[in-house]
Image 1 (cartoon, helix red, strand yellow):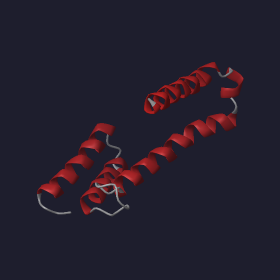
Image 2 (cartoon, helix red, strand yellow; image 1 turned 30 degrees about the vertical axis):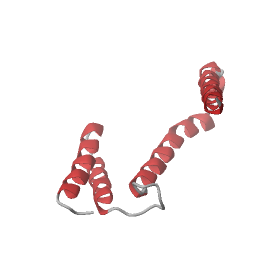
Image 3 (spheres, helix red, strand yellow; image 1 turned 45 degrees about the horizontal axis):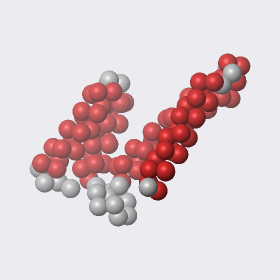
Image 4 (tube, one colour; image 1 turned 60 degrees about the horizontal axis):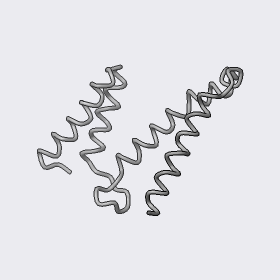
Length: 106
């Protein structure tokens, strides 16, 4: 029962947060500081998510450096530098990691 209460409270909190974004006055959203925040924060959050996922251990223990994952990340960075579309970036990263794992590396 406690888990369902937590799920309901979290769902309500997420709904209210989303509603607050939709109900925010236009002049607040047009403020330059808010615009800058909205542009830069997603980039930082995605970078942090990528760093965590690239170094996360599969068994949930301490972070580790996996050669296959890091190679996949390097392939994604290379594709981004070449201005490849997002789908190509994802396929390059996943393909590199899968190929190295299939070859027994990492």
